[in-house]
Length: 210
Ligand SMILES: Nc1nc2c(ncn2[C@@H]2O[C@H](COP(=O)(O)OP(=O)(O)O)[C@@H](O)[C@H]2O)c(=O)[nH]1
Ligand SMILES: [Mg+2]
Image 1: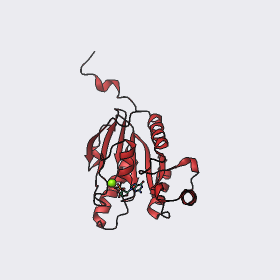
Image 2: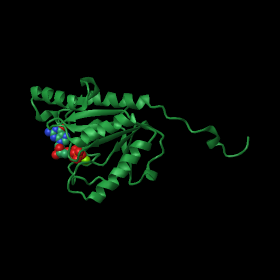
Image 3: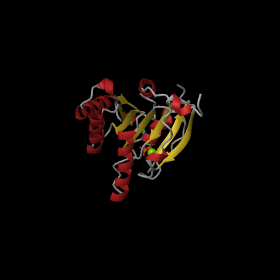
Image 4: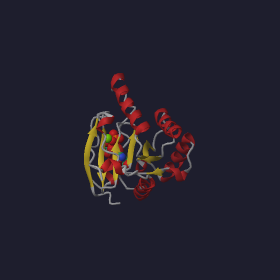
């Protein structure tokens, strides 16, 4: 899969606006400002396909990118931003919840977590919920470059314990140094390849009687 062959497809503000489920979805979730946009940009090797450091909490839609006519990357709304209204938060949560629960071609949710900080309840809840729904997910601990090697190991072990993960189930990453980028690319490709997209029923394609 050539991640560089990527283009923006659409922003969906409602489930009915999602593109046809012709390819697997790999979705990206994380608290506002965690480094989600930066990670997606490194993944596809673009400097600004996805805007970084825009106003926190601004992305209120599911933003779809098509990679190599093979895979949808889905930038989910950032969560945990205190300054949005209760009402706005509820409507995002509704969209997010419905998307994760109903999108049959969702191959993986990449859950991005800041390696520098202690585990936040919202991150733990998201992962617990994905486990409960039996949805594949991939935790990525980002901003590794801001820590010494020793502290990277120490913090990753603490997050692993908090999330009940083993080291091979997650990736330590940095958008600054590309640490973990190769394994991120191959893990995402593996999730996408493991998703079999059911072909349209043949009857649907027939225009008249045979
Ligand atoms: N040092 C460092 N800074 C990062 C990294 N990823 C993101 N940032 C910075 O963190 C801030 C938020 O990043 P952004 O990608 O916009 O986060 P988003 O809100 O989750 O999409 C920006 O100032 C980025 O430059 C990283 O891996 N290392
Ligand atoms: Mg962003």
